Every structure is written in C-alpha cells, then in structure tokens.
Image: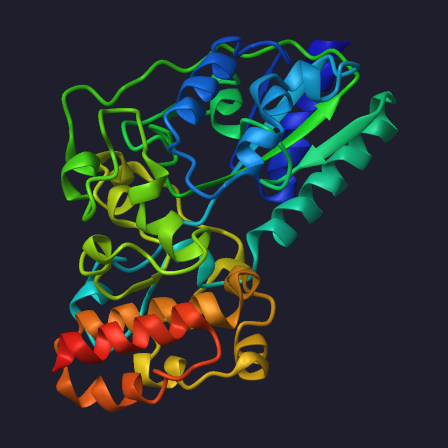
Length: 341
C-alpha cells in the first residue's frame, strides 16, 4: 500500500510542477543538530538570532513534529536562461539574485505543496504540515537524505540531474512512506564555488561564514556593513549568485517551468533605485521577495553599489542621501561620495 501510494504521490507531484521528490524519515539526519550547534558556537550566523532561538527544532525534524512518520521533500528549479554573472560588469546597474527577480517563490511553492498535501490526505488520510523556508526545518540535509541531491562545497543543494538552482519544500506527514536512498557527494576536487566568492565567505569546503556572505549582508544584516567588505560587494544589491553560477553540474540543469520565475526586476539603474522612498519601494517590489528587507536596507545596498561603480556621475545621487533619516543609509551615502571623489 505505502509503495503504491508513494508512486501515485510522485506522479501527482510531477503534475503539480515539481521536478524532484524524495522521502526520508524525520530522524534521518542525526548529525545535523551537532553541526548546527558548532556553527552557532562560531558565531557564523551573524545577526540571524532566530537560527539559535529554535535550534532544537531546526536540528531535528522529529522534534519539530513528533507525530510525523515521514518527510516528503520536493524540488523545483528556477534555472536562469541568461548568464547571471554578466550584470556584474554593468556597474551603473544593480545585480539582483536570480531567485528574487520573479515572483516570491515562497508563495508559489507553498501553493503547490498545499495542493499536493490535500491530495495526499484525500488519498490516504493522515495529517500534514507544509514548510517552505519559513520554519525551523533543515531543508538541505533532509533533501540529501531523501535522495534529491547533496550539499555542495558552497553548502547549497546540488543535483546531477537538476543543477543547483533549486527551491525546496517539505511536507511532514503522519503517514509512513518508504524512504529513498540518500544521495552521496559528487563535488570531487572541484573548488570553483569557493574560488569565486568575492568575500571569501567559505572558511573551508562545505562551510559558510554568513557574516562574510554577500547574500547575508544584503538581505539579513541590519545597519552599516563593515567597510572592509563594502568594496567587495560590487554592484550586488540583493543576494549573490556567484557560487551557484560557476558550478559545473549546471550543464545538466533542468529548465525552469514556472512562468512566475521569469525575471521582472532585471538589472535596474542604480540612480533610479536610490531615489525610492518607502512608498515607491513597496510599489516597485510588490509581490517580490525583495520587499521584505524594506526600503532603508535596500537603498543602503544601492549606495554601496554606487560607491563601487567608479562613476563620478553618480556622486550627486549619493550626495542627495547623506542626510537621510536612516542612519545606515546616510552612512552609506557618505561612504559612496567619498569613494567617488
């Protein structure tokens, strides 16, 4: 019964648009808790206090929901059609991470998960909980345990069939489903993702120090960024794709099928972005994951990019914000003006 149900579930998942599905037991990654605690002890989470606040749940899927008997991991790809590194040469424009250029993936993936979960309940009963990067769930280790891929040296999930442009979702269920075989690591001697990192955020292979990661600095970090890191951020104003973009396994990457992931943001002019007030920011990025960091943090990032542009013509744009009400924005404006003088 459970084998047949799993086969039907996999077919339904494909019909919903997922490109990968795997199952593991809630206790399939017992090593995750220890690795998380070691990472937290090093302080590598930076300002992400929520990583420590729910470390017990995050370290064990079984602790998060003791009644769960199986974890269903789903993968959806958002592979870009163009080279995401090309925009780094356009210094008067902002580089936005591929995942944030379309609609918010949280909404799109969760909608599919709920439909799939409702189908599962209708087919076999039980209870479910669905998660998309908004709860203390270790999605990547669970995905590896479920056979979807492995955590590469850049710590992101990587698949021989899908590449590494992958969104993950999870369905916890009280039903028992046969687990899949965990995926092994296939990075070999390659260090492309480590070598390209602008800020050297990887202390060692398979380890990330978020405090130096541009994705963390532009999205999670509040207040001014350390000056020794600002110059390394280039024109990246929301996230960073460098380590993902250079992975050789992407030559096998599957094409994105969800039209909502098509770019809406593109490579906007820095001068236009710097002029955004709160209302303008909200209107421009409505329905985008960018909206969640707020105008002040976003414009701070834009000003760092302006300071790194090498374009004296953008100095007046930065100068217009040296008296901004937000202290971090004003500080970034002064820094940019000084850089361009």
